Each structure stands twice: as C-alpha cells, then as structure tokens.
Length: 398
Image (cartoon, rainbow, N blue to C red; front, side, top):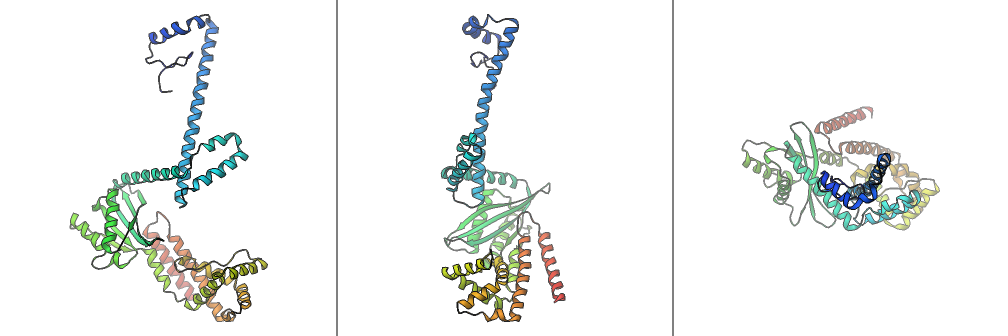
C-alpha cells in the first residue's frame, strides 16, 4: 500500500524488488508447501493469492474512504453551523438526530454516521481551521491584486462593544474580482476616527495588502468616518500620501445606507404612529396577543401580525401590509378592548395607509435587490435610477 512489493503468501513487504530478496524468504519459509504445485495448478494458486491480497487491500481502502468521508462530513456540518451563527453545541444535536434517522433509513450505515465527530470542541476546532484556511487563501489572493477598495461599518453589539466590520474587494490583472469579509475588529472604549483607523490598518496589515493599490473607501457617512479633520478617510489619505504623494483615493458614502436615510424622510407619522401604537398594544401583553391570535384563527387567518421596531426598518412594509390585510380583525379586537380605532373608519386615513403599504413594498424591493455579494456600482445606479423613474410614473398616474 505504500508502494513496496508484497509477498503474496505471507503478505510481508520486500525492501528491494530483487530476485535474491524474493527467492530467499520463499525457499526458507514457503518452498516445502508450494513446490508441489506446477503448471496450471501453480498459475491458479498464484491468481488465488493475488485475489486474496486485493480483497484485503480493498477492505483497508474502504475503511480509509469511510473515515475520510466522516471527517469531510464533520467539516461540512461545522461550516453550516458557523454560517448559520449557531452555537458549537448544535453539533451534538445534529449527530443525535442523524443517528436516529440512519437507524430507520439505512441501519447498516449507522456506524458510518456514528464516526462523524461533532462534539463541541471538535466543531470549534473545525471552524477555526476553516477560518484559517479562508484567511490563508485570501492572503494569497491579495498578492495578485492590482487595485482594491475597502468598506467599513461600525456598530454596537448586545454587550455594548463597538464592532468594526472590514470588507475588501480587489481585482487582479485578469479582471477577476474578489469580494470578501476580512475581519470583525472589536473597538473597546472610545470610537473616534483614530480608534477606527487603527483597527482598519491593523486588519489590513495582517492581510498583507499593498497600500499603494488602494483606490476607494466606502463608509456609512458618520462624522468619525467622513468628517473634516480627524476622520478615518482623512487619516487614510494621509497614510497613502506618505507612500506616494500623488496617490488619490476616493471616499464614498455607502449607497444602500444613503438610500435608507432618504427613505426615512418619507412623512409617515400620520399612519405609522397609529399602526405602531396598535401593534404595541396587541404585543405588549401576552393575554392581548393570545386573544388576538384566537380571533384570527376563528376568522381562518393563518398569518399573525408581526412586531415592528425602528432598527428592523425593512420590516416596516411587512407590518403595514399585514395591518392593512387584518384591519377588520384589528378594528373588532380594539372595540372589544374599549379602544376604538376611529382612523380605520376614516376613508382618507385608510387611503393613506394603502398608499404607504404600496410605497414601502417598492422600497423593500429596491433595498433587497441592492443587497448581496458581487454587485457593481453600476447595478446600484441602475436600481436607483429605475426607482426614480417609477416614482415619476406613479406621480403622473396619481
């Protein structure tokens, strides 16, 4: 199996394939037993021994294939756990239910499924190795970039720690575009332009980028990102000019974030105040929520009323649409609770609600279409321009 010749009789490996090295062990150990075979019988015996050796090797090969498959499955499941942002302990549950399924579907393969290692420590180790491999591939890819751009975004997590997300998009001499997430940098303490700049430079230096190839920086437009004096964009320009005085870099406002800010200027208070107040009343208390769901079941409505928060602004259109579809049930429920919604009886207000349902649905479509990987600025521009043309068309129709 390692390339050395093997004796067909005793399966002992021969160091060097020379006649002497083969003949001496045979005459010493096997001649008395096998010299009696001659002619056709001897040929048949040799073929029998060959088949026996091949069968033994196939058993070992099959064992290694099953073992390799178990390791591969372990890595694939660990990758899915990481992508889904699930805890490492999920591997134990996955293995438990996989074994249960294998017992009913293919009991003869149960041991192969049992060989898949999915303990908490193993999943953590697998994810760490996958991360290192991706980082290593990205480092190799960065070396071939002829130009690259950077996108950063800073946000606070549930533990009140500012997290700086760094993304890079580069192109090589063959015009092959690579877009990848670089690192999530925790920024503890203050989140000034200097702090964010240090985190950005540290993440890209570890990646081994050539700063002279930087062409643009995209941010969310916050003062510490794109201010006038001590912002990240200014500090990055100063760093690049130190490398090359003639180097130019473009700092741009994230087009999706800019469109979000524009959409928030839409005057929806007349409608949204009533909708949010009603939705919060239904969801604030468990009794109200249960009673409202019972009312929906009586009217054979399978979909409930979603909860709305300003952070999840993309769901605004979903909330408005469901509110409009359930307006009769909502009016009935609020009357039962002694909170009559006179707005639902006002045709003009209902028309405003209908208009908001339609326009937010279009906004939701535009925003979701502009999100995703491997998109060019021309695609964003086309989406915005098309939406502007639609607005003009809507205005003329109204």
